[in-house]
Amino acid sequence: LDARDVSTGRLNDALAYKVKHTLSASASLHHRHFTLNLNGRYRSAIEEVFIYPGSEPDAALILNAKLNYEFADGFTAYLALDNLTDTQYEELERYRMPGRSYTLGAVLRF
Image (cartoon, rainbow, N blue to C red; front, side, top):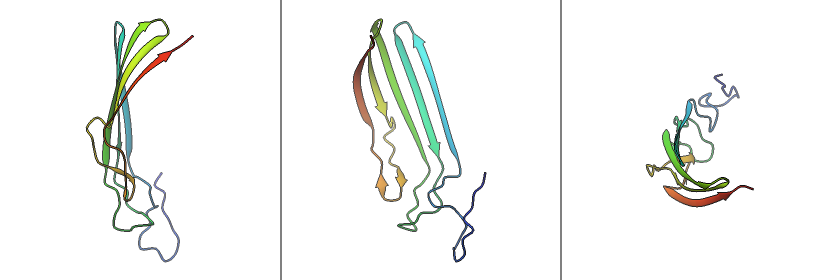
């Protein structure tokens, strides 16, 4: 679908904060007790904003990774890296999203 704003008095017909293209992909690799998951999301540039015209966020490619290790049935530890490439991007104009972050955790299922 190619939705447009047909209101009168507008300079263009682009919907505010709507991206034209998005693409998500993920892959997982299992080897013995290890599981590696990689995922990514591409978002094209935002063409129209309301609050600060002229500061439309650029396109962004965000990559994430998570490594799990299963110690025993029901007990897993993991290391996750979000925004692997430390990309500077904005979801809304002038609202910068976090850079690379690390999470260390454990899961116990019973």
